[in-house]
Length: 142
Image 1 (cartoon, rainbow, N blue to C red):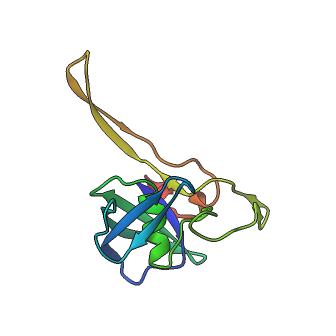
Image 2 (image 1 turned 135 degrees about the vertical axis):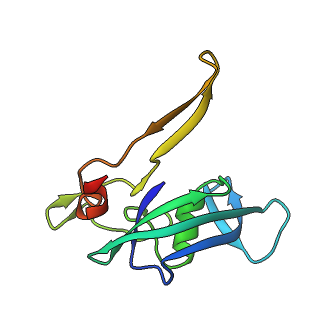
């Protein structure tokens, strides 16, 4: 995954580990201090790719795939995803005449076994050339 977060994480690369519990009534995930019944371990590795205008472009590799995991884990370390009003900051839809109304989280690769062709299929995809993605040089060269 690629993500754009507010601020600059304290570490340029890290593994985030939390125990999370989902409130299905409110459709939100909460961190818990210890392994409560029904909580699930969430783990991911991130690497800072670039910083600009107090925003950071990250590469994220999930070790687990929990509900809202990326969104809640980055909010917990003080770097909520750009555009995420549920776990992060409420930002205006229009900023410096740039419009953005989505969470800045992008799945860049997917690989799966094709049941008919009997082979692994791999797809790559990168964010569109729109704000906030288009402020980062990393994406312009890839």
